[in-house]
Length: 415
Image (cartoon, rainbow, N blue to C red; front, side, top):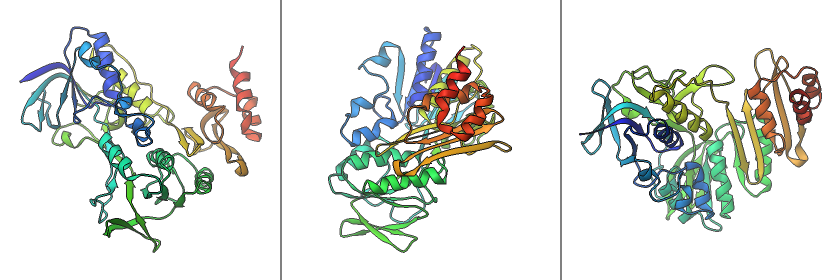
């Protein structure tokens, strides 16, 4: 049986950040990384660019160089973990083999949710989660192809951008009453919808797919509005769930993800978690939740690794943030953009030019922001929220005109 001082299950951004940090801080300890896919670690966020042909498979790799991991003595095993024996510090693999660990980091990410609908196993129904998925979509998403995209959340809209670039005829079906509902309010979501419709897309909000069937080699997509759509390809982007089934039977506490403390450790000694499978602290609320974004995953991995080596690193929490390019319209949301109890919100809307700013305050501090069509202040908004800057008289000025955010930043941060 093989044993390593540090074992990482997963091969995404959190896992790679952790492996690199472990190697820098513990140059003589053994590191093993377990990946389910038999290819070098890659970024799922790069897959839409594979669809459009902007990059090839090599362009998705998180680290370049044929011997990058070998040169750093990071051993990669291409295997699937089926269970954990925390008492014996053993990982049981699908092959029947076992791998022992001194300290374990679970960084297995998430996987797409498959709705319980008839027909989702038919040929031509794809997720966009692996390189194989991206290649399968690219084969069917040629010029003029009729495509139905199920889901207009953050991931769905990233895929949407790539499908539009492929010159496909796109119909988007979203169950909620607006696009990107976890990132946008009604005003912003509907503004984005109108933008997409002007680009030639069909956007069906408050609509659900009820089933799929094969009709002469095409896919018939039935919806609860009574309509049907014939498609060459159906892409499913209806949410994700943490990849933690293999921890069943252990004492590891789980909610939406693995519950971790301020040092990224689970309730089980020597087992840590990071990335999309972990519930980390939210900077804005102080509560614990899954932030399925790459910057958070990378930060998780780094801090978890420091604590695994005995160096005390305290996790202060990550800021909930998203920046999205949807057919050329840039949108962003930060922190508690929905507003807080007892707080105030203000907005500026230029619907004709698809420009929108929405700010949320608690006292005289900015705690959340949402923008469309305005890229100039994205960094400033994030900075003001994370620094918890007291805006003083500028809070009232921003309530009157939220687009004066750059002026408020200069006034409150320059000596």
